[in-house]
Amino acid sequence: MKVVLLKDVKNMGRSGSSVLVSDGHALNFLIPKKLAVLATSAALKNAKSVSKKNEDIQALHSKLITDRLGALAEETTIILKKVNEKGHLYDAVDAKEIAEATGLPLEAIKLEKPLKEVGTFEIPVSIGGDFGKVSITIATE
Image (cartoon, rainbow, N blue to C red; front, top):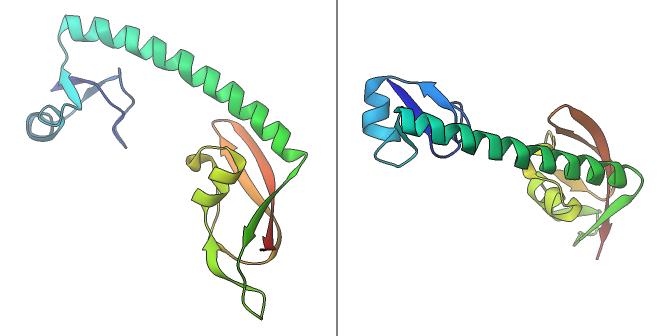
């Protein structure tokens, strides 16, 4: 069954895209949860306009994030945390906290495991086709 997605669905597609799914999945999950509608001519026409709007927004976000990534490459972001006597953090610094400190989206931070030590770390970042590194310094409060 062909449906038009109303919202982004993980491992399926973005809003406004038309996808082919099994009848059961469409009728029992996507349509009742208002994630998709049947692919009628009106829905497809509406999907084109939504898709164009999403592409424009995505291009703008990509440009802003690329500019932000360039600015972050030249500076170090400092995160203050409480530590014990041995210099270990009580609470690890994860990708969510790094994203909040740097102003980048969570999906862009490619952190293998949470940081549990005081020091300066190079965190890989990838957004679309742009790759870079962000310097994070974890210091004591």
